[in-house]
Amino acid sequence: MNWKHLSWKIALLLVVGAVVFFWLIKAPIMSWYLTNKMGVPVSMSSISIRPSETKIHNFKIKNPPGFKIKDALTAEKTIIDYRAHQLFGNPSEIDLIEIDDINLSIILTSPTGDTNNWTAIGAGMPADESSASERDVVVHRMVLNNLNVQIQGGAKVLKLPPTKHIDRLEFGEFSSKTGFPTKQLIKAIFQGAGIDQYIKQIFTPEKLLNPTNFFSESEELQK
Image 1 (tube, rainbow, N blue to C red):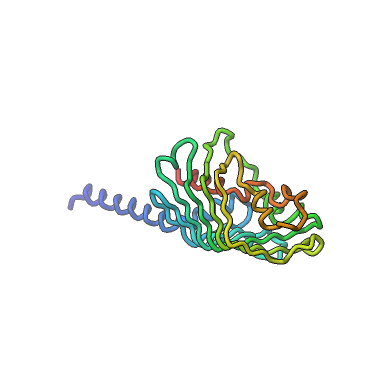
Image 2 (cartoon, rainbow, N blue to C red):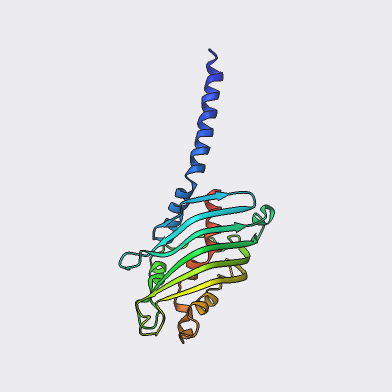
């Protein structure tokens, strides 16, 4: 028996097995990575990565302990479209992020809304050790479909409805350096509620709702 030939085959099988194993568990790995980044449990049921498209199913961010609503954010399906040569350029460019069937909870813990479940998540996040020279990620277009918002806490004081439904929101041209257009999102949710003076205090830090940061982190994980 050619032991050298046999050992080479065994080594090849081990390598192939390891690649298949890590490919199958990439969703748990990414969930673990984002959980460490955010300081609260983050999960997804599956993630598929192709040369021009990434799909994520059942993405969830949990609320910190002490909040009655279990999830801060859930999204049934996320599709990220890009062209490989632009994705790995400088800056990285993403053509489209489309997120379907979103449930967002906003739990106000003060009458003015300046403290809430999202500021609690931000306060618990580990310090950001990323380099200031990190490659920028540019998103040319983002679409949110079927956004459902549940509002609790200070909503009665601010005369806010307990729920808000938005069929479709679309944003264009933002980046990890300029930040996600959080102000536009908040205006769409709280339109007519008279709390524009608190608009910058609802989601802090802004990185929490900036999908370019999640995408750049997923790139870092794959290196």
